[in-house]
Image (cartoon, rainbow, N blue to C red; front, side, top):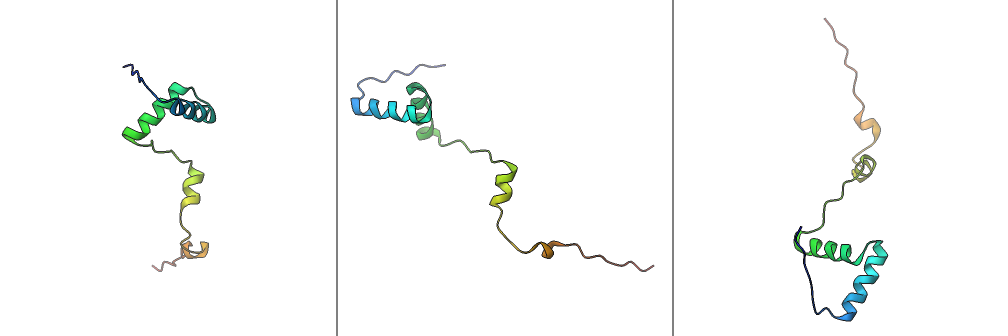
Length: 75
């Protein structure tokens, strides 16, 4: 994997990176990777659970609106 060295970073940027990494529970190096990845290729799509998908569905009617009607067959 390629190695990236960044020089001449302002102290306030380094402090902020350290704080942010601590808040996310990762190393400064990992936080730096995440920031670069997000800035250059965007955020990864979060996979949602089945429950989250169901809860995100809009309310489109009452349960009775979706009941199957029984048809009588005459032969």
